[in-house]
Image (cartoon, rainbow, N blue to C red; front, side):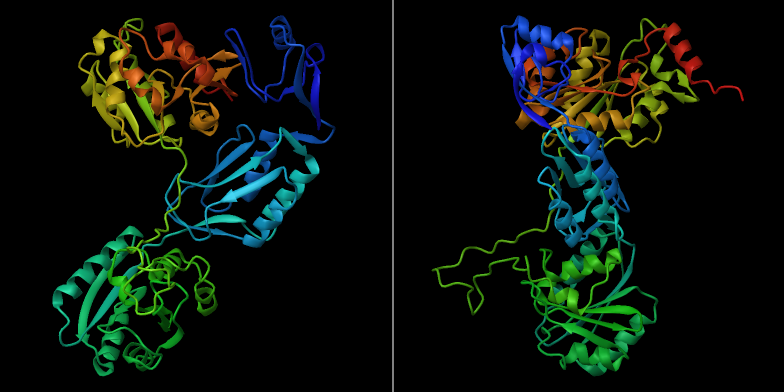
Length: 552
């Protein structure tokens, strides 16, 4: 790849390195300069610009990122189309992120131009949460580097995968000692049930007995006889030794102790054992609290079907210091009074929080009937557009209803979208924008505003807008284009919501694009869906003809 300044007259076909703005024209970095671009730049009085030209065998940043992301993604991971050299990977189910650290390091050592960043090993992830990102640093990378990185990613099984949580049936035994209040055991049952429910598991039963091996061993046998997948034991007193009451009772019930103790604090006194094929955990006292502790790390792996044995637990020390607790008899450092306990939650960061507004309240005056209810391939136009939005990473999807609101609501059926009503829909499009903006959570980072009469958009189109969105880098209004022509929907950063709420008349938010041209970023799409809105009977008939199956 050749990099440097060249005379503007020689820049056609090269890639622009630094964004340019002159008059009402803005050219973003990464743009392949056309003859028209070069003429405009020259007319603005610019003599030289910095550009990149590819060498034979070089691969453009987006193509390279897409190839590597496809090789990296394993079970239950989806990839979004690359933009500006970045391809994001998302979880498709709730579970644990499992990665091969050695191959991840080898991939990142291939070339400084190729990078792969992930959430931590065994991070708990939700559906549609970003779990990794491939970023190509320059505008292009040698094809050999891409091939080597993809080979590391694809060889030896999945480099990244999501181990999904299984709906396990779990039993809980608690032991009693004199002086231990039943309310403590009641609260422990409640906390344990909530902890399991968060992972999709069920607390099948909870039973109590004296803190003596003679009573606990038969209780273990009885519990395992009910076909549970996992047994938890909360002792009235913490386990102090492998020969203590709980481990001795597990052995008496025909089980084995696999490991006692772990390098995670809180959670040091966890015990791992099994009876037959059923795992049995002796829980540390901190497991009575809903705060994250070492028990969570082991429980999550068991529920996800990820093997966790003696060696796995002994390797949990890195990152295993989860809290500073000032009441310990042996403080961790003699630096004066210890601070208040601070729990470090094992919570994975998510990508940008993007919502979607589906504007479906209009009068359909040019159609002559409510176009939202017109059928396309047997599905109402509004439902078809809603389904396309739901196939993207935008959440929540909020439909704004107005004209024939009850009928449009019924057409949406059981689709998992929120619905709000605009009683002032007859006063123009701006009223629907206002109504939708008012329904948005203050927690979102941006919103895709989509017209209900755009049934050919795809989830991939929406995800390409989301991939390009980065207000910190000046990409705060993301506009789709097709062959250079701007279309819809548009993704807006949340900073523009007050201005959108102040719109008036039968206009959308388009006027804001001109007012904030420096923050607009165009994304070229690969289909006409972003240009296709159905306003008239002729347009509807043409679309139906286009979608008719061809005769065999």
